[in-house]
Length: 394
Image (tube, rainbow, N blue to C red):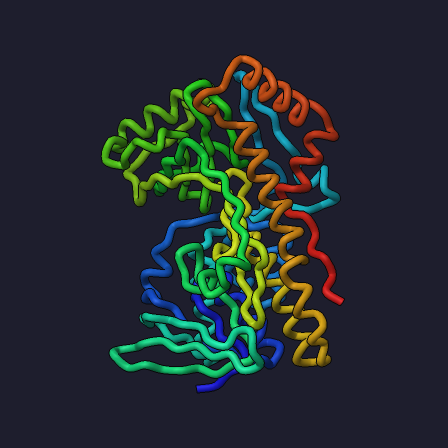
């Protein structure tokens, strides 16, 4: 088998890259170790930056998103009993975010892949990368007991933190940066109307709260909990009671509870590897970086990587600009580190940390009062939340 680009991973980043390459007349094969149903069963992010929305429109997979997605002009913060709206659209010259779940993005991209008759091979195992520093890389994998080989020009590693792509880069080349946070997020998904029109990020003495949503009838809530907690220790009744206790009385009175559709505890970490490129292998999304979900940057940073790699490969195949290949890692990382900084900033702003002393708490309080008490501070939050602009590939 031969193609121009092998994409490892059929999550949203791999599928989006495949769709954009298809539109540019560049062939690809997508390899995925899981089944399509498993991929669609992942409950992940739901906040799309302006740039991600624009990229999905460019890829031609925006029909359902534009019809069903919820455009949000602002976001709300809560601390010390105060509710502080941050008008995103007003502070960023008209930019907004879109509430549209990652599952739905993936579903749209899968449908587009099928319609374009692009090759996606699910249920593969033992994926291995060869000759990635040479001129003729290839990938092998096993499917139903048979070993297969794909020859290609380039490989895009879109296979997440636990995938094989990152590990194909020699250890003496790869540098890792990591911060692990001493708490987790307990998330609950329910078919209940959201407690508030805009998303709410709240600091409370009992722990951080996020009131999010997937639609006008489906809500997603998160509570800061110790890493030692288990989902079994949090039956629905306890979750709703704790959530209500961390919200102001007027919001708690509006809270509609219901049976949980999904409940899980996610540890929080910041993680980046450099470089994001080795020879003809390019790392994309979670294969190269993880962010705590506080800044809603995970899926959006993956889309940012896709944007840069797609535009570089288009120029390679259409204009012969192979010189641009070496710019991918540095260009992608500039935006990745800014996204990491914002997620780290939001996490530190809104969570309580074990071992904090009085000085730490006063500094945290001063940060909240400055960033949420001045137009300059709120503008900084707003422009990062809606997404910093992409660099031009030229």
